[in-house]
Image (cartoon, rainbow over all chains, first blue to last red):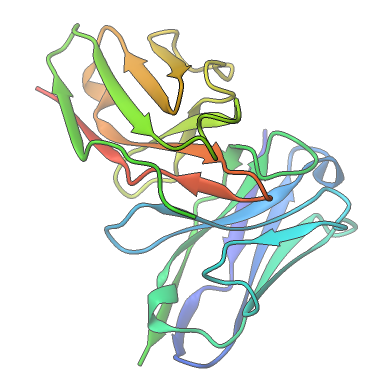
Length: 121
Length: 110
């Protein structure tokens, strides 16, 4: 079965960096686009970024453009999110999610359990 | 990237039907058939319930259905059950490689 397992969350000071990882299994990782979606405490979902199946196309929400970088290593079945210049409003649970297509963003048919990022001032 | 508009809450008694609306614009919901719906129970990851307006993933009960008219999409839950109590989010492709979510609707089964 499809499995997505995020890691790398934690507490970090404002202005610092953090890298999240998402290990995928149970499906041909290199055939699907994958996303990062976040959810601030008590708030709704916010799409963050998507990367196409071959890694050639990457798109970002305006709120993270220029600060976050999405990448993938298909040989390791792993998705990454490099987060720089973190701000307190980046505090959220970050989910890794698979798109139904090889490119996106269209919809999320599988989700990980999430990893919490807390940015302190 | 304005969020889609959902009512903050909805409710119904067991066995009844409830419809949750999701209002966008001609730049997102009105232009693309890439509307999807997600169910999220407290402390859990979201789960895909409807994609491409009205398609159900395998394993999702046929009590869940989706539709769209103009700039508004809807999720209908028929034959409400206690386990349907959750938060529901809509999303839509918004062009220019962007995707937007609704603010979420808390569904209460009375």
